[in-house]
Amino acid sequence: MKTALARGEWVDPALSRVTVGDWAARWFANQVQLKPSTRQRYASLLRRQVLPVWERVPLSAVTHADVGEWVRRMTQAGLASSTVRQAHRVFSLLLALAVRDGRLTRNVAAGVRLPRVGRADKVFL
Image (tube, rainbow, N blue to C red):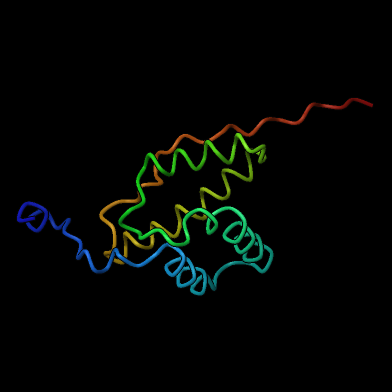
């Protein structure tokens, strides 16, 4: 703990006990810069992909491996690669705010391998 304090990496454990669901609601409410269509898409991604898995999990309990497993399960469930990538982006954005707010030391969603978005087949007339 002394080393973390000296490095400026110490996080008060009480701050990271907030659940992802509570933090997501706070994060989403502050996204005033989004266009209405983007805001609607983020709300849909939170409701359908992020919160069913992460809602009751404390921020401190989310790990890089867990996020990777979540991405794998979404991909295996048949979700489009772009949907998986967008859901990951929303989750990563809310974790990034937790880092800036001093609730986490790092964004555990950063660096997770994501599925490639395939190109549509070209159709020639």
